[in-house]
Structures are given as structure tokens and as C-alpha cells.
Image (cartoon, rainbow, N blue to C red; front, side):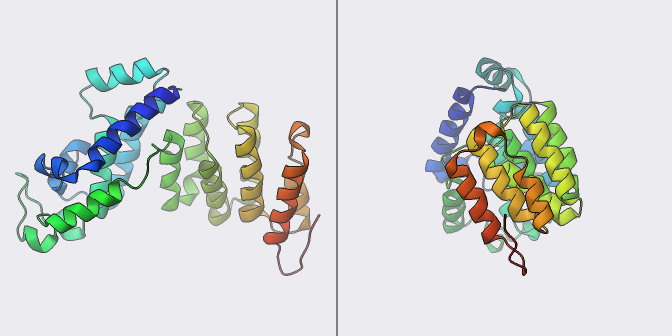
Length: 263
């Protein structure tokens, strides 16, 4: 796992690029054709294919995919692949582009009716630049991979397997996304508990993340009093402090069913 220094360096570079959108626009970043080229995709690629390519490149270029900060920096310098900053920038631009921009850009990077599409509009570029600069924190690779679950909740175990195999940092949002996917795909509490137990065994969860994961389990996977008791029994002895017990109890009350069951 890359150290925090590598992620901080990436975040700093992203903030620098986001600060002045005009610099990026002059380099062609307002053009979806240029973004497709960064991702190595042909003209006419579907949004689904763009997303799959983004996840594939993120697994290769994100600093979390490197064992050390030095390795991450060396890979970004020596590899023929784009750096993660460029991959993310291109992906975000393509996700904001409309279907005409994705399907109407010629191979040489020109687009008919560019102004009508908004690609040449200074106001549009400024607005897009503002949206790019929303966050001051680079998402972990685990968080990036979990974004796939918004479209493919049935891929929860596959995504978890990628996180587990690479021993990636697990954030609160990642566990919430995994458990929500378990619930919406129908695999439910049993698979969600499998993920939680494996994460604990591999020591991938900090204490705050473990606490938040229990709340997410209750929120998404609790069905009745019995399932709540099953979740409650997952609390490790060293975590049973008053604050956590109060939080879990309140979560059970907050997400109670019509029968109002509680521990």
C-alpha cells in the first residue's frame, strides 16, 4: 500500500490543475476526444465502457496500487500509461459530456456544432472546472473501485476481492457502498458479514471504520430482530465502549421496521 505521502502529492497536483481551468482547456482538456485518447478509447465508446476502462486504469495508476510512495512516483514517471490525475480528469470530463459530445467527436479532435455542445464555451469550461475542484482529498483506490457498485451492485464480492487481494485502505464510504450493494443485489446480510469478517481478519479496518461499518450493516442489511442480534454479536470485545454501544443502539432505533424491534 502506498503511503499517505503519495496520495497527498496526487491531491496537491489535482488542486493545482483545478485552480485554473483555462490552463487545462488550452491543453485540450475541454475536448472529449482528447479525454478519450488519454484513456486509450476509440471514438463512440459507451459510458459503460468508459467506466470499465477507468476502473481498469485506476487499479494500475492509483498510488494505492504501489507498495511505496517512491514506487508510485517512479511508476508515474517511467510508465507509458497516464498518471492517475490525468486518468481521473479525463474520466470526469467524459462523465459530464453529453451523448452528442461522446458520439459526435471526430478522430482528429474536432466536433461539429462545438458551441452548441458547450465544449467551446468559456462559461461551460469555468463551471466544469469548479466541479472538478470540489474535493481536496484524493479518493482511495478502494473508494474508486466501489463506485462501480452504483451501476453493478451484483459485483460486490468481485470488488471486495480486489480490495482484499491488494490489502487496500478501507474507508467508511467503501464499507457503506459494499453493504448497500449486498442489500440491493439480494445477497443480503450473509455476504455483508463475510466481507466484514474478512476485513477484520486482515486488519483492514481502523476502529472508527469498524464502528461506521456496523451502522451501515444495520442501515442496509437488518431485516428483523434476529438479524440485528447477529450484527450486534459481530462487535469485538475491544470495541465495546459506551460510545459505540450507544451509536449501534441508536442506529437500530433509527432504522427500525414497522414492528419497532430493538435490542
